[in-house]
Length: 447
View (tube, rainbow, N blue to C red):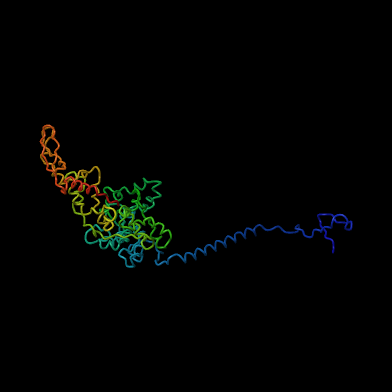
């Protein structure tokens, strides 16, 4: 076998003596051409394009598998109020021939603050015609029957109230301005946007029944209430229609609204209604229902606003207000004794009764016929005992022998002795205390 020869070491010339033979260098890169850098660049670009193409194909496949079929033709985005083939979420929830077929986005556009402000009301009037005699349960004519079947649609049509001219339509950006996250950054901006209808979310002087549709339009303002659940985002209806996991997560915030007898339902009623529109019912564990109006309490008397106003309490005392509110006393009770969940709309109509719980109102001293009978008119108008007035002594305490003792009158006074009550006879003061407690029991119905 021939000896290996290497270029980097000297050849072995001593016939095997000394160092072992080494192999001669056989290959060399001296004659190789340098690699073209453009080849490497082109390969890199080609690899990126292939990866992008694969990602696009995967995205199209996922969209085809998980997105719902497109049933509407949205190629023409021009607003056309008479184009009844535009059926939104609200219409889809109640059927193809729904009384209120438009979705909230459509109504938000044609009845926007900018359009109404420019007297461009034709499209809004045409779109809102079906809701005109349907979406206010407090208006006469049996409209509550329509509202019972179109509660979801009526929330979408709430901006139609702007046609009355009493209040401007809520700004289309109100949902963002008054979100819980935005309130932590700039609460004043939301308060300013809601200032015209602050009565919709304030417990005192609440106007939900008086301006029901407007308060639904300004529903995002409910986030200004302390310890309230967040109002549903405007796009939650679309999220729930896609059966997205986000739907269940967002609707979980309103899970307490599923119990009409809960305190959460009573204190966040308008916010709960926003989740009803967003289709949480049927797409999550949150199932919200609203009983027909006046299903438990009678309609509020016509003089309720007058007798329960500050002026009415100052002139007549709280007796007339208590009498007017007595039919709805159960609306303020918790647990099984309460009836707000059985008739939330009817209870809200008695919102004026909350004035009985205000500390500075005339309700602090409720008018009690029983208590008034213990003091004669002469005693009320006469001077005190020290100046010779006539007073009625407090009821004597019975002794063990059945007799009673009467406190001695002050100098110059005349004392009328009241016989001791027999066992089992109700004390007038106890009756008065019960009536006073009943008056104190009226708590403002939170919106």
